[in-house]
Length: 212
Image (cartoon, rainbow, N blue to C red; front, side):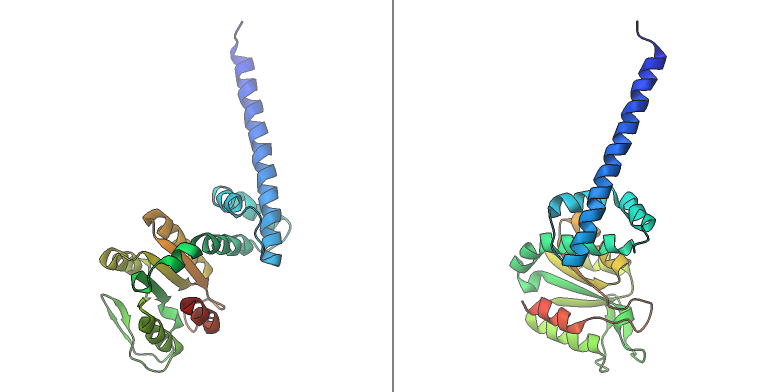
């Protein structure tokens, strides 16, 4: 005879088993993430990316539990997304690609003015101006933006097929997620030193990336 108590017991056991299963998966992903970060070798990248996306909070909690920097999870997630998207990004004509720089990369004395297209470079001598000029010579559309609202509006206006985003880890992570939603081929380069002003980018890495 069916009773309520056994039914709830079955549900409770199922929830416990599911929690144990998710915990085991999260531990496995955490180990793969740590290994990938140290060796720059990605095992089962599609599985790792899906798992990091679904179990991000739990995986980060495991990293904190063993006193490891949980930003490693975001770092590996960005690297995985770059690895998965890079071939299609390279196949996109350069004149259909856009680059977004954060305004914090400009020099402290830069006097560029804000417009509907972002900050207008005045060629004051800071590295971001030189990079913009070099990338545009290759065919890229390049923008220096103060925030995500500019990026969304410029994407709607110019309709790129591929985007290279430069920024802090949080901004790049959010940008790649936005590209996924919009079905745009997105890749990202993170800053060597983040912050609101006087940030640092590995410019050699940037030039190597855009010229390949």
